[in-house]
Image 1: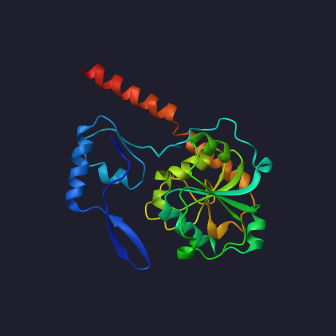
Image 2: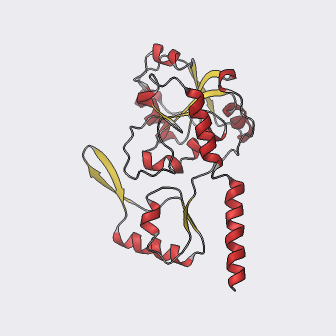
Image 3: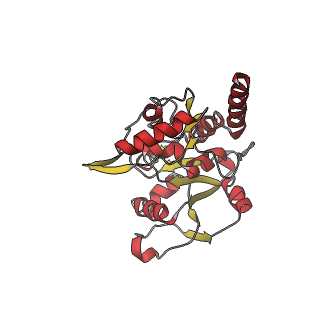
Length: 249
């Protein structure tokens, strides 16, 4: 069983928001986990939540890239001075609102002179403060075109809380192609764990991009982190568990 979206209830706490499960949801999740021979969660908070279940194998497995993994990504210094933004409309709206804090000099300092936007466009008059570099609206493009773009662009923005970076398919796609991932959300470590991606190591925060100069190491550490949880290793783990169950029967 793979828990990608553990059900949750938002509880507002000033100045942040945390998410908690209701008691009934916790019971149901643990019962489902108890029926499985192997349980994966893509967030650190899922491990202590489900450990009381009867299943003996509850492990961390982040969301993998929807666009595969580029075995030989283009070196960062040879990439185009382009930023890519993609994801669902609500998150892209939020990202653009957060990116409005960057002046033209800031974009130049991180080596970006235009943004490629992937996905259905929305009415920018509703939510966008003017951004001082061109935004190229690509709309819906093919899977193959996205893969080619990811091997060209220098940085990619995404938005996720610290605990949800590991479940972000956008973050996974960036790391799989050697793109420097930049999270526009502030860092609030509610469930810190060594195996989770960490700002300043596997990705950058928007607030740090002007002071962090070694973008190459971020791209490298991000790719190395994702490789520890590759689809090939995941399939090997599933086969190991199936064989263990068959031997017991």
